[in-house]
Amino acid sequence: IKAISGLESVSDTLEELWLSYNLIEKLKGINVLKKLKVLYMSNNLVKDWVEFNRLADLPVLEDLLFAGNPLVESMEESVWRAEASKRLLSLRKLDGETV
Image 1 (cartoon, rainbow, N blue to C red):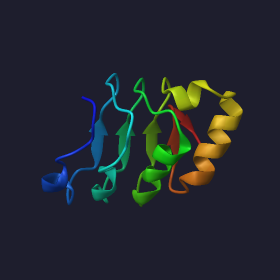
Image 2: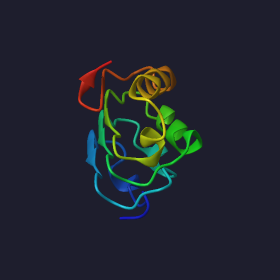
Image 3: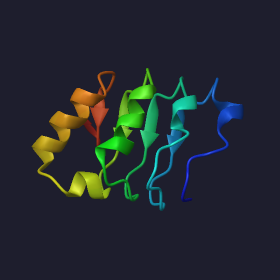
């Protein structure tokens, strides 16, 4: 999988989405998933905050697995955790650990 698209038909009900170990670079299209609580997106190709910030359009996202993306790997874990939780205020769990 290289892109997130075609999810409109499940946007009113989808609460969990598992997309780890793919080739996703861009998060365009994720914004339609307003009920999404859990997103597992580890080991993809997201490399910048511009794309990560699209997750802020998910108002009830509380569990995010994002380790293994170039963005995460480019910084210290403490910096990553602080920045990610500052940008996604609804998060309760990040990369398997409580925020």
